[in-house]
Image 1: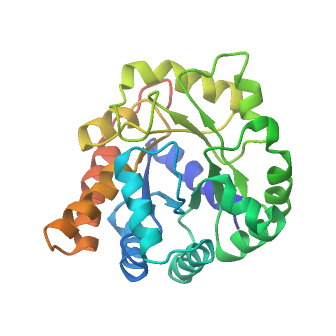
Image 2: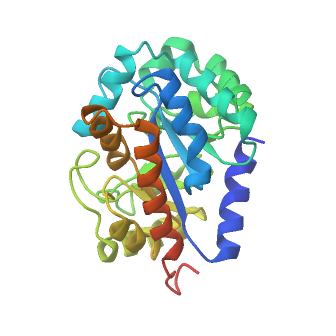
Length: 277
């Protein structure tokens, strides 16, 4: 299904007049078995889409929580093949929830774009977000993903002006990820009033749903963003739960999924604005 899963999910949510809750977790964090348990539990906990990070040694766009998550995953021996194996395992139990890989370009260059795209599609990956791939250099990757029917999902930011936006949106599919704040993940809080005009502008220019992330930590903030965007993405707050559960010797899966439930409940309860209905 690949891209079709993303399109079907957003179409269903539009019919329900609500935004999606997108949960980001790091593959292999804190270990393969626990990561698989968390991933398997996300849909029932309320995740409408899942972003699965693949660990990289130099995650330049990430704040400390996701940096530490990547370090834990790498220390546990997580590889890109291991990430795809995790995705394939998830797909055996869930054929409907869109699964998006998110990470950095270097591991894909090492693999080769065509080989990676084919393996990702086979594992049940629906889309790919590569934080450090400039749109001017994305055509070879986009070609490989198109051949495998995997969406290339691009990032727009508060500094993406009208002149730059068409370049950013070129060959984007699935949805557009709007980085709500300048800086790294988890460093600042997203403001719904500030986000609204950007979401409307990007949606109009792309014709695609717009997901907002990088600054959502609480159910209250997630609910506010869900009123103005097509999806609210939470990552740092979830990987923080992993770290805190480890420090407290608590069940990591239970703690993460409990946080997901609270965030998803807030998103589902949010009243969409007339502009985005």
